[in-house]
Image (tube, rainbow, N blue to C red):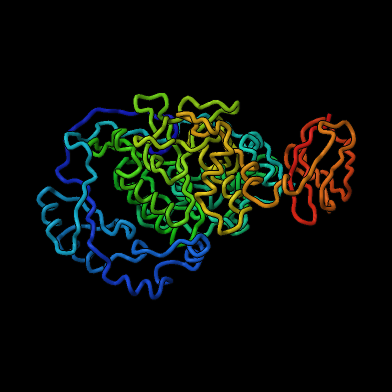
Amino acid sequence: MRKIFTILSVGFSLIATAQTELVFVFFKDKPNKAAFYNNPLSELTQKSLDRRSKLGIALTDQDAPIEPTYIQNIKNLGFTVTDYSKWLNGVAVDATSAQITQLSQQSYVDHVESFVRNPNGGIRKEKINKFPNTQSQSLTNFNYGNSLAQINQINLRQLHVAGYTGTGMSIAVIDTGFPFVNTGSAFKRMRDNGHIKATYNFVNKSTSVYSTSLNSHGAMCLGIIGGYIDGNFVGSAPDADFYLYASEDGDNEIPEEQLYWIEAAEEADRQGVDMISTSLGYSEFDDSRYDYTYADMNGSTTFISRGAQIASEKGIFVLIAAGNEGQSSWHYISTPADNAKVFTIGSVTSAGNSSGFSSYGPNSAGVVKPDASARGTDTYYAYNNSSNYGSGTSFATPLAAGGIACLLQSLPQNTSRDQVKINLKQKASLYPATSAQMGYGILNLYNSYQSLTVNDIKKLNINIYPNPTKDVVYITSDKPIKSVEVYDVLGKLLKTDYSDKINVSQLPNGYYLLKIKTETGESVEKLIKQ
């Protein structure tokens, strides 16, 4: 399957098979790991160590660097080594069958595993078309504008009004390139506030992620989370920090991209990020020898799913798009969305129905996938100097990622990530039922917030009445009311009051939010003015 999750066409003509194959050489050990344990800052940042400490996650041998002499030994055998993984403890090389035997016989090598799944395959004459085929239209106080409906559908705006907009949360967007992020006005607020913390291109091993020659998919996904156009668009986590990593080769569908992703995830871990958002996935490649079957979608067979699981086990909340194959012969989720420990996102329409293109679960081991869903049909994103819309689980995933970042911001820093994942599923729209395309249903982030924090409405014993109202609304609480802020449908603050009786008679009929603060906490409640 294509990695960029939009609706694409695929050519299947085959030509001759290459004589070498991509393999991963697993090393036996890490002889110098003791030095790492004595000085973890030699490999991980303090931010990364702090995340582990807060979540009670111990350092393991996976965190120690690869033995450099082993890498040099592989090079001395005549192999070119450009990609490797400390988590998997090995390197990737192209090798013939005779060379695989040679590698397996080295004293420091544990085993050699090929990426090939179908030895009788070959090179496709026509490349897999991976570029977005989305409908797009350029469009001209927190004024959500075009993004309001998709924010409301996952009940995120109440979290924003409560003050949780992603501040202090760090998200690695691992995707294609990020053209215009360094110049476009849609990303100006992000740049001016210093929210872009690091960038790297793991495909060509450079810092070039902004080149306009790169595919723009990554920038669109970033725009859904952190883009901002006053009065026109607000991302789902506009105040989060971002690490922008390119792992997708826009011109080729090659198995090496799985390694690029793992390398990006390892760097994200080193930097101490809280979350990874990825709208990429794999099942088919330009060389069909590497193609996966549905049986391989068991969460542990593919290299990238193993890497995604390790990232999750390091305390990173990993979100992956389910894929856009719901209407194709391959209608299943792809990898790494198949891994049980990642949070997989399906797509729904504005009416809350499954998007026809959204890929089906479960994974081949029977694990419910996707985990939950967000809007991926006609989803708005900020890009360059404007707001546009498009479709795909590619867009549902960053929308959900930003919302979950806001939720994590609201929680104690030691809150178990597994606990959050369970709660998100329990508060989704279909729970306890599931759907093959929606998982447990549409996310309900403010409900998750209320159930996971001590400051929910039940514990504050807040009540507002009458609701709907024509002129006055009364507020009761066990604790004295400190303030009440009234917000309109676009998120604009309309008035602030300091009593338990709020006059809304001058407001137009419609839907409003009340942010109610007491001595012990706060809650955000919906109000209908008739």
